[in-house]
Image 1 (cartoon, rainbow, N blue to C red):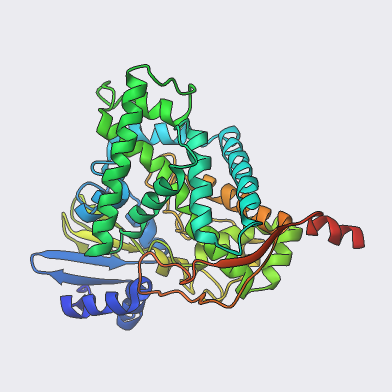
Image 2 (spheres, rainbow, N blue to C red; image 1 turned 45 degrees about the horizontal axis):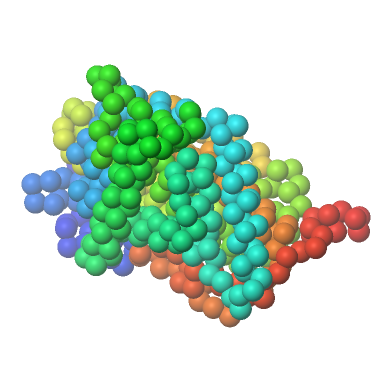
Length: 427
């Protein structure tokens, strides 16, 4: 039986610090292997990637999520004991609640709310010398998703709640001050949401039946017990926070329009469903989630390599999305690659792999796709703006990362006639 190639803890720490998103992929290449191991004292961390690795990783008979999400991540990003840490019937029970929101009608309602907030924001942008798209996007998305979910939120509260949501996301790959800021943001947000759930339980607030607030406040676990208030709060935040996090993809989409200039006109015209291809390529190409973790349930062999019970295993999501065996010219931004490509469960891991109804693939993936199409469609159809000189580079060693400027727009104005209509008229 072959031995798994090894990396010592110092080289792994240095590699992560210097390379961030590409560390696992770079190390796999160095060993000419899809798998390697990091020895952390008594703990063995196995890293692997590729389509076959992803299919194995999402096999619930082999892997469990319990014990795989580090406490610092639970205290900032996901919340403690959330759906991300559940397995088996408990996971399926929570997943059904999330998936019940992912209907075509519900997603359309959300995108309509996003458009409403975009029009409101545009009125403000026209009076400003410049705006930072990332900051604007997070507030727009926060207001839209809260209205959609039935969560009361005032215009005065929105910037602070939106900021705290993004601080929680920004903390997931950090230690020290960034993580501490994320923890403080989560505590503030949980206090706010606890109060709202309490009002629902006390019948002081009656959300619309079927809304995210209604479902989480009334959800029963596998034993038939209503989730306690802290747990209901955690799961409701796990609906709101990821939607606000689409602000990262919005900013990267604007970066793509500026860097790959033909993509903006193609998106505007949307020939042969280009918008869908563009959104997929943004999620594949740009860095957001580097790895996903799980624990080995019982010892098994994979391509001759032994996976010991309870080992922590990291799946290389970024590397799989840039695997030359799966993607032609993976380091190039080519939305057209999706024109004749059927997305399979384990080759495109922008938001996890497998079946979203049964496994741990993100249930909000459809929301991400439709909200991005709506948001970027509004920017190209309804808004004229300049892109002043700024630092649009991003640090791939930082997790998560973002264009350094946040994407500044200046001289923003409303288009009187959509560019798409004008182009068609000239034809």
